[in-house]
Amino acid sequence: MQNLKLCKLELENIKNISLLFLNKNNKFADGYEPLKAIIDKDLFPKILNIYNNPIATLLSNPVFEEFSYDGKDDGTIQCLGKDDPQLNTQVLFKLLTKSIQEINSSNVDTISNLDSVMSSSSLYAFVFNLNDDSTFTIVRKIYSSNYLDKNGVFFFKKSRLNTLKENLFSIDSKIDFILYKDFIYILGKYNFETLFSYNYHYQNKANNLLVTLEDSNILENYKEFKEDCLDRRSIVKKLAILEASGDINSFLNKLDNNPKFIQDTIKKYNLNITLNSENKIIYSDVATLSEIINLISENYFVSDITQRKCLANRKTYLTDNKPKKKSRTRKKK
Image (tube, rainbow, N blue to C red; front, side):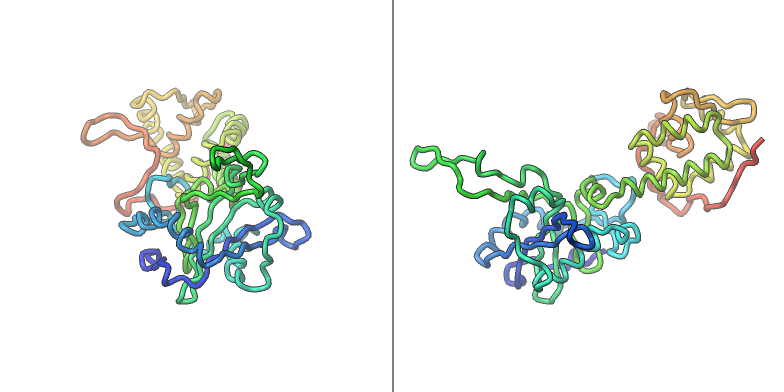
């Protein structure tokens, strides 16, 4: 993950810069057509100048961490290997990495019509070919603001209002992610997840967790609980995080072997949750959904310093004290 710190993105270290688009086109087997814009060398300094500040800030004192479901856009750089199994099921990502490798070959055609490319592409990428034959690629999700139609853009010249004769492509200095060597460095997590369908990944993980809850038979009105969970994106993501961590087992074991501990926790934090005579959680309506999810995720705690009751938005274990993953299924009564 430290490769990024060693990169020298300087003018004298750059052999070429190309602008890559992945244009939706059903005539191609993958459903996308890679297209490039050739960039004159006199524009290289201007392009570098756009990204100089964000990259310099990035490389000055970077804080890296592994990509995680509950990671936030908080200034850290989340990293993911290019061989990540979720990414490698995505046609868009596989084509992106392939097109970067072939950017200077005849396999990638040049753009002939900016209008159609901008309206049917999800991302653009500046591909920097470096002297050591590696590539440094900056990727950004396309927004409507990137494309300026000539019919709606005016400028002043010698006190006269004039209209442009060409459509414009506008870029900002923001970066969603960088591909360099064997890693992806993610700066815009939301856009990264949107581009590569991580929402579907979260949905699958959440469904796995819900199957565990159903098999464990700890919820009364499970069907309604499941429907309400899957209707809410934030809840789906919390369930995916819980599935990935394996922490659900500690809650299930505690409820099975020491239900009084769960009852005391509910009372301590004044939660609107009730257990029935069989120590099942009674799901009544959506008003209790978040509390139940946070309870089974063990997100309630008391601060050692202030003794205030708290709700954790994100848990990071300081020592190797995570409960071991162990299969456990409560027998249905």
